Image 1 (tube, rainbow, N blue to C red):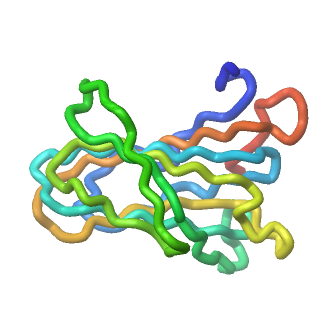
Image 2: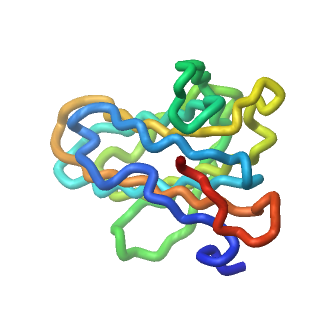
Length: 164
């Protein structure tokens, strides 16, 4: 599969210092896609705080009804070490929970969260997702960014709208 032709790659959160406060990413519509992958990149820098990652779902990309609800995160993948280092992902699971807290505060890390459209409350019209990241303290700079990859287009052709 060629992501650029069959899916959508989006910058959900531009690089920012997560030590400066919570940052909510763009609302992304899964109306035209069955799968969404979030990739969080964090350079620990001088920071020693963990990240707190949460997901919300809404009925539109503007959350115009202010109806967002928390979406459980039951699994994620984590790779820690230097940004140039090759390694393997560690698969984490947990019972239904509002989010997760990273456990490698002084190490550069990649986190991957996989979301299937079926995980959303589509019966009540929820088809949009936003990922938010907060820092557990104020112990130094931590550069964080989030890329979202939509795949498994519900209709042929790809290139469908994901952020309005």
